[in-house]
Image (cartoon, rainbow, N blue to C red):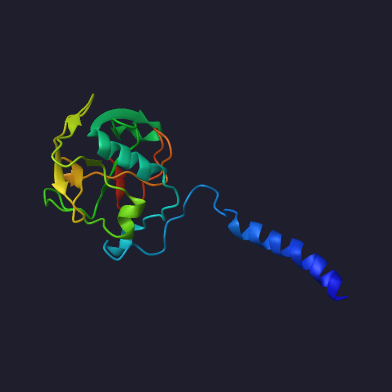
Length: 175
């Protein structure tokens, strides 16, 4: 009897490990039930689940991102990062011309900042009519602003043209 138990225990253990390691997410995040502590409660920011936009944000930071206007699905023409074509967003809890981002902590993981290298100046690409500038974030990075509001990527946008980041308090940016 103990030999039969051992014979079954090995394969059952392997099945349990494989099942535990597999992803249960279908690729899109549902809105979180609670906003990050550093953000006003009604933000309903989704949980971050993919490093793609973070990698895109890093690429933008390394190359001195330009911002340009492009058509993005049903949103019409919105701003995208010129270096990677990813849709950019603003957060309604940010205060125009305050020089500060209110998206910190876990919020910035879900909504990575559009950044440029320290000392770099973002440049406006085709169709951009507003003013680009930068602010210094608490972590020392240099975040791009548009008409006085900080710009962000969304971690669940995986390719140019994605616009999964339109949530309560988060808006795609019209030129």
